[in-house]
Amino acid sequence: MDYFQIFSIIGSVVLLALIINFIRLGILKERYSVLWIACSVAILILSVKKGILDYLAVSLGVAYPPSLLFLVAFMFVLLISLHFSVVISIFHEKNKILSQEVTLLKEALREAGINVGGKGKDGK
Amino acid sequence: MKDPKILIIIPAFNEQASIQGVLSAVKKHLPVADIVVVNDGSADSTALIAEKEGVVVLNHPYNMGIGATMQTGYKYASRKGYEIAVQVDADGQHPADQIEKLIEPVVKGRADLVVGSRFLGAGEYKPSLARSAGISIFSNVVSAIIRERVTDTTSGFRAAGRRCIDFFAGHYPDDYPEVEALVLLHKKGFSIMEVPVRMSEREGGRSSITPIRSVYYMVKVLLAIFVDLLKKV
Image (cartoon, rainbow over all chains, first blue to last red):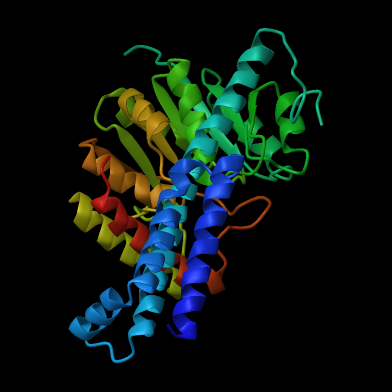
């Protein structure tokens, strides 16, 4: 077993432990952890079962098998970032709708003679 | 349709220099219309001035951009049951005496959205060379897509009928709303019409589009249009 293999096994185990602990503590929602878990498990499997990595490397024409590990990890990072962009876009839309509702609600309250303060009339 | 309920929507972001003039001009020329100012998180006294003028002011809790600001106005119009909504800029470039020209085709049911164009003969607007190149590119691309001649795609001087108001309340583009809205309306099968209007130089503030950024702006808008074509509405 070479150093690279030991290093990547330790790395992926630590990553997996971190993810599970974050979920356990409730600071990482399950729905945002799926890709992370898949990523760490994939790297762990490829690190432990060196044969799979070597086989894949040969069939893909990669001369140095460990570099395939980087490729797999990089693909996951790309996927995770894309996932974040989608999530942020959804939040952006929801946040816009929410703010518009607050705006319209405040006007409805003002019309009913209730001043809730904040920006605008009689507020800062 | 006799005496339709008309709402003038005025989106405003830091327009204290010009808002007063715009409001009094609209009141003078269209006393039957209601006015709503959508204040998009201005840091100046825009909202205060508008409130003193006695119009409804909708205050966004923070700056949300022109798309969201127009949409808030359309949501208000839709919920209050207005039959016609007119977008008028707060910087004074849309003369109140031209509003009736926009409303007329909507009242007569000839179009769902009427766009006021600077390039159809009324007034004598002469854009710079770079600008007119950009304007003609937008115009050609949008006209080809919606199969109808539109000369002033970025004009924010518009009147919308009931169906259009309800649609905008639910779907309004975020980033480059004037151009994108035309494409979305076409996809939904709404009718769009242009009428010649005169526009004036802005009274205060400055255009959000500076010459240096205009090329970048153009590329982004064209991209947004093509993305809109792929979008599910």
